[in-house]
Image (cartoon, rainbow over all chains, first blue to last red; front, side):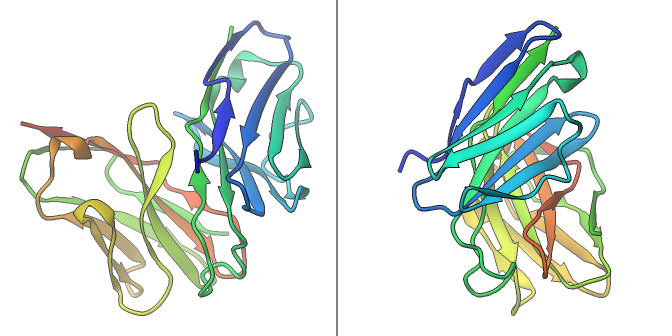
Length: 120
Length: 113
């Protein structure tokens, strides 16, 4: 398997522009997670999906951020309008059915290479 | 809520020397613990995890960690590091009734010849 695929790997945009980040999870994985990594705040979970349905979006910073998962093999994270403080590395991760966290069928989250976003 | 504290932000170490990365956590419920590694310009990769059972956990690349419930710690160790171990290391925790990982701030390990 190719692993979790993210595109683009790098994105530079002007403040106010719309940005769309894309993720293809590992085939067969039921869970998909979006994280943001910054120097100031470290790694933060933004949102996660189970079977294409958003389960917890409490980490989404504000209404400018939205995420969708139209099917099991594709997810997007959109920022509209973008601001310089959105500059960060955005990671997508996927996981097979984890069951109860820590249970005997608990599985790790597999991370993509990330998208480095710079908003000027 | 859970939180993770990695006590060292930077750890320089010479090749073939041992290394220990410290991690403490706090939680009001049972948790499960993980160490991830991030090589430059790459995503995170799982090194090892503690779910239950033996408190000494062995992972990939010769790393091991010990869960200490009384001290709420999960320190990572390697007896002899290589140049290729230069990376950032993250400790993470998940509550037993949740699916969300909480990460520490990370420890950058730089291995010198």
